[in-house]
Image (cartoon, rainbow, N blue to C red; front, side, top):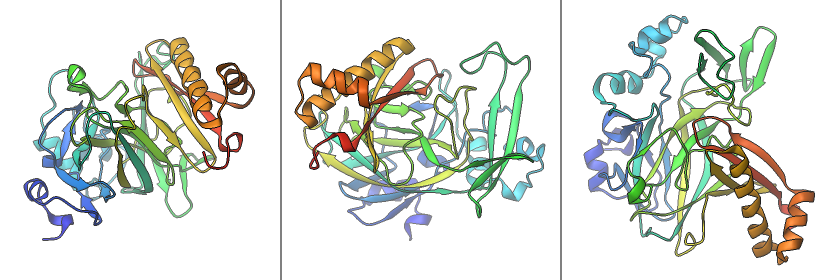
Length: 346
């Protein structure tokens, strides 16, 4: 039996030891709206393993109608609706109080213990379909008073040209990333609703986490217990109307455990070719910004050998702070620290 055809039970029984694995987003392999702790893993891998993970967008599943009818209203033929989406809608129960996201996982990484750090290398992000959804309406987004009625947009994607066709005259470049990447939260916060992000990661909607970037997450539970979902074809910083270009994606991720490196991590961190990224999260946008500034100062003290005063000054002069997440109750601000500011070895 190939990994593509494996059931949830067979994946649990056969840990993957470094080989490439394809984890499907079938009903037995997903959690609807909850980031759990210590649920039975749908896959076990060793540190260093690479996993190709199918995910599905919650759009079309949470609308209260069959996803075939939901997308059919926009002219999407039934055969273009993923079988995974149809099966999840019919077979997976959404618990009361759970968030709307459909997450694939948990993936258990052998050797990961509380206090460690999980490095998640984003090797690729593939599109599964050529249409996405942007929804908003009354009471939604960062300016909830703006819309008097539900506004639903089904947006076609031209994969060959790498653009989303917002309107006949407006095209937007695709930049796919996973809105949610998370480890199991601390026991006191489990299960966590999938909507607000936290120290465990989750719904950060951090648009820099595209192909080639790396995410670092503190580990709170044995095996780390990784989840991902909420695929975005593109998004502006803030996700201000409440949704991005919501779309089903398949990321290819490599998991690497760093023993003891998560003990001093208050928030996730990330990096790409040009920058390190530090974060702060809070229900207050002002406090989220303050926390991100503190993280920048600490990072520069540690990696550039600066005093607190020097790091604070360099943060003011050379670090840009952006609103990564302006909605979903918990706000996230991130600071982009250019790598050129650091010693070559940092």
